[in-house]
Image (cartoon, rainbow over all chains, first blue to last red; front, top):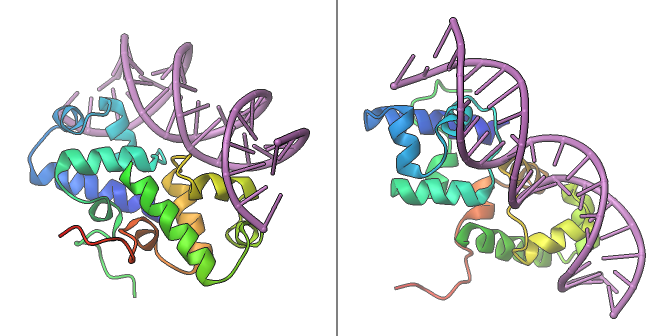
Length: 76
Length: 76
DNA sequence: ATGTGACTTCGAGTCCGTG
DNA sequence: GCACGGACTCGAAGTCACA
C-alpha cells in the first residue's frame, strides 16, 4: 500500500525533524502512543478523519502527509 | 469533516464528468453501489486503502480525490 | 437510478503490558 | 525511548431491503 508507506515515512521524518519521541508526538497529534508506532510501521490503514486530525495538529495539510516523501531514492 | 466533504464533492463531480450512474461508477472503482452513495453524501470515513483503490481505478492520484474541489466558492 | 437505516464481520484505534 | 504483543471497544467495510 503506497499511501500507507508514504504516511509512515512522512510521520517519521516530521517527528525526527521536531526531535520528538513517539510518546510526545502521539500526545501532540492526539492519538495513542502505540497507534503512532503502528502508523510509522505501515501496520494500519487510518481513516481520513484521523489523517485530518493529525495533519491539523501538525499544522500541515493532509496532502503533505500522504504525498511522496521528499528524500526517497528515485523509482525510475 | 473537511476531507470527507472534499472527497464527496470530487467523487460526484468526476462521476458526472464521465456521465455515469452510481451503479456503473461503483463497478468501475470496484466498491459496492451503496457505498459510493454513502461516500458522495459524506456518511462514511473511508480508510486510505479504499481511497487508494478508488483513485487507482480512476487513473488519478489520491490527492486529487482529497483536495479542495475546483468549483468551490473562493475562500479569499 | 438514488438515498437511507440496519445489519455482520473485521480491522481501526486504545490500553495494558514486556524485552 | 522504541518495538511488539494480547485483549478490548467501536466504527469502517461491505451488503441488503426498502422507500
